[in-house]
Image: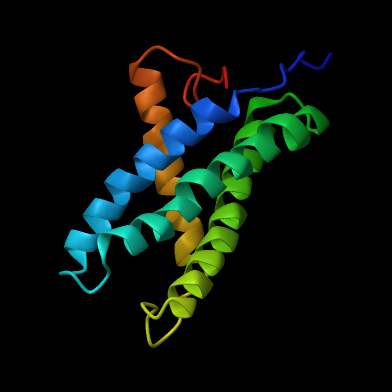
Length: 143
């Protein structure tokens, strides 16, 4: 018997408020970490790829892929981590193209897999916050 997964829905306003706030904070950190080489508004734009784009990667998993998979926890975990990895690779590629287009990109392309592992780390951190707040998360299997 497959679990009756609930489709995840959220008002666009709530999504934008959360992801833009994350991008503003992340952009501030990135700008400071780059020693001013990347100005704060541009750094915020770059971080928005992972915050807003990452939201859509997670929605794709929750609403499209998860209902089509076996309900076995190991399958769900593996598929989610793989989704995060490949979503992170795609988002990092988009971020790198944007950085190059606005003139702040690196001279050399970073290893393609770095974005995948970085995104997995960010998602695990985000789900840890959800877990600590008693909300459904990756860790408790309710999300």
